[in-house]
Amino acid sequence: MKVSPAKENILKRVRNALSQPVQLPFPHAEGNNSVFETEHEGLELKFAEEFSKLQGKFIFCSSREELADNLQSLVENKEWKHIHCKTPGVEAILQPFNPAYLNVGDMTEMDAAITDCEMLVARTGSIVMSAAQPSGRALPVFAPVHLVVAFSHQLVFDVKDGIQRLKEKYQGNLPSMISFATGPSRTADIEKTLVVGVHGPKEVYVFLLDE
Image (cartoon, rainbow, N blue to C red; front, side, top):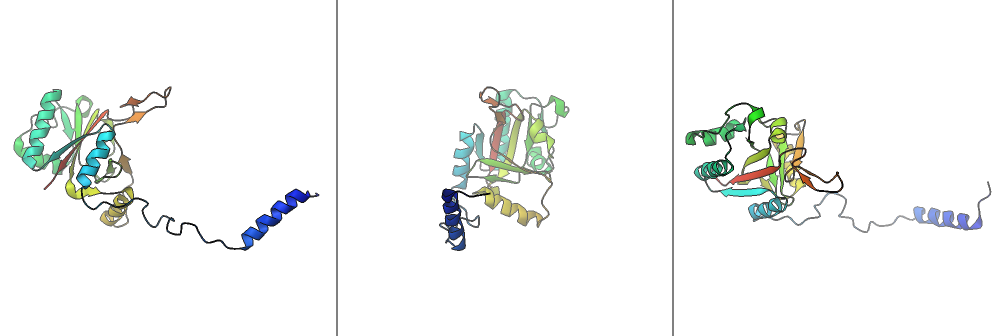
């Protein structure tokens, strides 16, 4: 097959270019370093800002008593009767306050669910959860409203920091499922109209406990 002079000229230039190594224009942009500047202070504020932009509700609690009071006020305001919780650590925090709304009835009747989390990602306002948590996979998705109890030491700046901390926590044997929940469930697949709460909770609250 005869190659036209124009095509031969192009191929010649390509061969010449490949034979001469070219230095990478951005040698430090190969995934080894974060493209975002890490913030070491004010992670609580950063998470609250980003989480609120996603229609999430953020409540800061300085003590266990304040956490219990805030939860009770929310339950009374929403007139919830049944909140399901499978996390022993969270139940232990709330049990001294004798919450009448906790674990009454079965999951099909619940108004909301309380779970813990693996960590919170400040830059994206995301909640990191895994199959290793006592709440399991179904509860955070099945509940119409998801209430998350987290601690200030669980805050990380970026997703990369979160993955690194998970590797350290589980010593390389990661849980079978890790999810990054960024705000309430939403979709715009139907006629490009945003609908909240289709594939998961329509409301998400984060109670951040600073101990």
